[in-house]
Image (cartoon, rainbow, N blue to C red; front, side, top):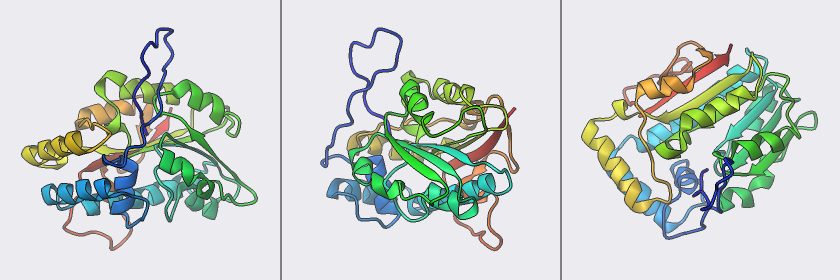
Length: 278
C-alpha cells in the first residue's frame, strides 16, 4: 500500500510517513478483504464497498477475478516459467491462496518477499511467513513508492542476479500521478536481470462506461484513505516497457489464461498482463 510522503524530503530519496490507521475511512486492503468474504474490515470499509456495488454491480466479480488471476499467473510463473523468486508489492490482508502458497505448492523451494504498508496487514504478517520447509518468505513493512528500501531489504532473501517475478496486483491505481507509477515500475525492473517477469493488474477506465467510472472514482475520493487514479490502456502498456508480454497480452483479468469452462457473460474492469524482461 502507499502512504503520504513526509514533508521536507529534499535529498532526492523517497521519504514516506506512516499510513494512518483510521477506521472511519475505507481502506483498499480492508475493502478487498470484505469483497473476498474476509473478516478483517470495519464498518466504513463495508459501507464504502456497499455503495460502490450499487455504482458498479460487477465489483465483487472483478475483485474475485483479480484473486483468481493471481493464482493463474503464479502457477504459470512457478511452473512453466520456472521462477523461484517472487517480490509481491501491495500484498493486502492474508487470505486463502496467498502467493507463497500457490508458488510453493508447485515449487517448494520458492522464495517470496511480501511488501505492504498497512498496519492491519502487518498484524497478520505471520500468516504470510508460514513457508514450506524448503522455501522461505519474508514481509517488508514499506511503502510501494519507497523502492530503495524495498530493494535493499528484499536482497536479504532474494538473489537479484537470478530471475525474479515482480507482482503489482490491484495497487498501481492507488499511486497518484505525481508519484509516477511508470518510474516506480522501471526502478523495480532495473533491479532484476533478463528473464525476470512483471505481473500487473490495474483499473482500466475503458472497461466501464465513462459516467460509471467517474462515479466510482468520486466515491473513493469521498470515502477512502487512498485516492485512485484511472490509467488508460496505453499507459498500462507503457508500464511493461522493456518486456515482452506473455500470451494473451493485456486483457481483462478474467481472460488471462482462463481455466477451461470458466467463461461467462460477466466482465471485470481490471486490465492485467504478465511481461518477460528482455
